[in-house]
Amino acid sequence: SQTIHQWPATLVQPVGSPLSLECTVEGTSNPNLYWYRQAAGRGLQLLFYSVGIGQISSEVPQNLSASRPQDRQFILSSKKLLLSDSGFYLCAWIPGLAGPGGGVDTQYFGPGTRLTVL
Amino acid sequence: QKEVEQNSGPLSVPEGAIASLNCTYSDRGSQSFFWYRQYSGKSPELIMSIYSNGDKEDGRFTAQLNKASQYVSLLIRDSQPSDSATYLCAVNAYAGGTSYGKLTFGQGTILTVHP
Image (cartoon, rainbow over all chains, first blue to last red; front, top):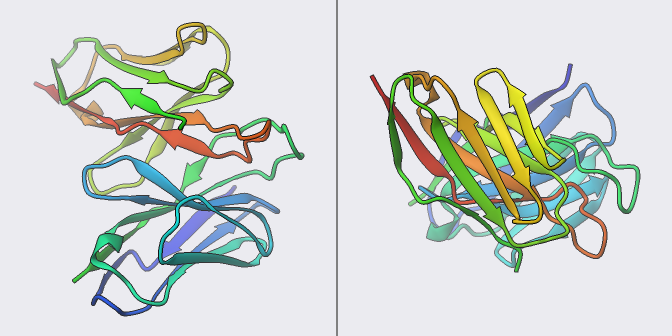
């Protein structure tokens, strides 16, 4: 069965420090991967998605970046954190789509990383 | 801008009652619709997915979809205190005929079921 991991579970960082959050998926190949942020009391905001190794699409301009160095690994990074970067970061996956116009499957979420920037 | 709107909460119902959660979406081309439940401090978990007009039932949960009205709802029968959570409506987000699996989420509705 498929499993998705995220670490760390919680993180407290000072403003201006770097960030690296990791997400890995087990039990599947060539998944589509997604990074979301959920600010306190808010809905989910899609930050990045990836349909393959090295393929990253950004949804929201910000000081965050994403990388996919391996098929089942998705990393969220920042060189300098802002106070507004605080939130609950969620990684999600679905099976890789057949191509343009492919059907949408269900997204499954990892346990999340709660980031507090002080 | 593609939008998903959920009925404002919080919603409070007594144990055993029916809870009704509503969601409207702006993109008429949307084809896949999902309801997630999120307990406080936890990640969202899927409750229901629905793709065709009409009702889809799974245990105490019923999802209803009306594409003409761009409306999707979730009914929870025999509500239990354990159903108390935030419920998120999500709609696939097509851009140029391809979705890449992207979802647009509503802001969520907080449901409280009191004994």
